[in-house]
Image 1 (cartoon, one colour):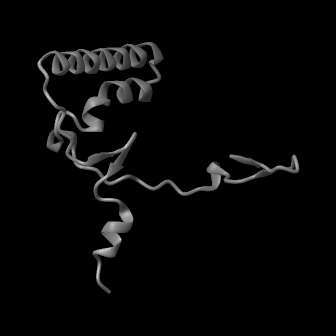
Image 2 (tube, rainbow, N blue to C red; image 1 turned 90 degrees about the vertical axis):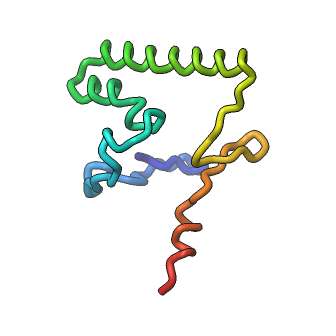
Length: 108
C-alpha cells in the first residue's frame, strides 16, 4: 500500500508482504447461525480458494438474490428485521460491542 501526499510524494505506507500472517479466531461453521457472515459466504469463499472465479461469482449472485427476496418478503409482510449485533444511528449502523468498549470492561 502506498501513501500519496499533497506534495505529490508517493511512499510505501504498508508492505503487506512483510506483515505477519495472523490467523483469525472464529467459531466453527457448524456452530454459527445461518445468517453469520462465514456461513452466508462459505460457497463464495470456497470457490475463491480453489480459484474458480465463475463459481464464486455465481455463489455471490445466488446469495445476493436470496437476500433481496427475503427483504422483499419481509417488506410485503411488514416484518421488521431484528439485528443482533448492530443498531441504527441515523443513516449509520453501529456495532454494539466495539473493541474499545470490551477493553474498557477489562480490569487490570
